Length: 310
Image (cartoon, rainbow, N blue to C red; front, side, top):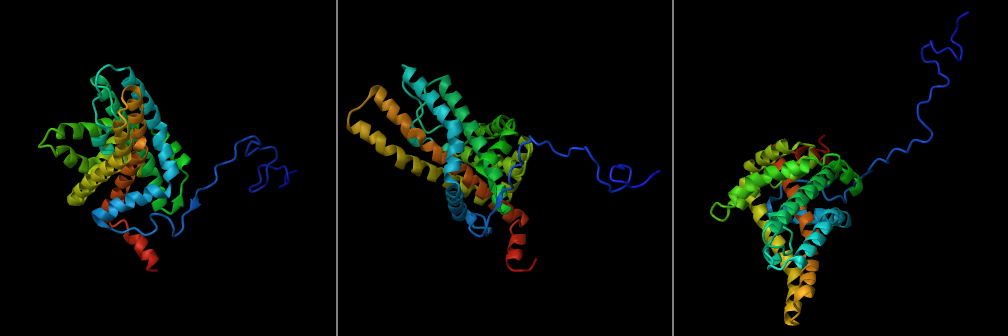
């Protein structure tokens, strides 16, 4: 006798007994990110020019300031501590002046020991800036799509693509370091064409070479905007660092404090990189959006929706 009984697994659509579709001890799936409303930093996107990009970078940083500073601190604090130990243990004079080293130059805003240590810490600073750019790109892509992706989840997404950081850092340095020898401004010109590479890698899930090509392709369509943003970003970074660093350094000089105490105060003041590094990445992210709006009209669909035309 055949029939579509309750235990007949051959009958189409019949329920099956004893087949588990999920384990009872499986972890719960993560909650979907919350949608962003009109208060999001990218609720209305349009071409804004150089000053608008710089201001937009500050707005992106303010939107998730504690989280972005935490992302920078995770990689920069160990470097700062290592650098402090090297400086304290070095009998030679320090190399890099923290007042004249913007974060965009991939150097930590604190003095580093002369010789090979300065190169090592410069490379570490470049890796840190690329990593923060990768995380910021992941976040900004979600914010632009109207989703409030948690910072921790964005870090996880970027961490699964950790290999992009060293490869992309090497590629960008291969472009910028030789250019730094050209007429004193070659570094700025080269940086204008590649400074959005880390953000593009995070936002568009690109590999290192594809991200570098993407940054160059977007920047070359708006070269003067790119140059203005890079120059303005460097200027703002220097101003922020001078404001934060000048006070402690002038204080220890006026008190005549020297030796170990002066070095520790100087390194502590150098923690301003916890703000300037994510700020640099946020400016690059807003520039990435600017270039896409100008070159691809990426903002047109959003503006049509706002006007009820789509």
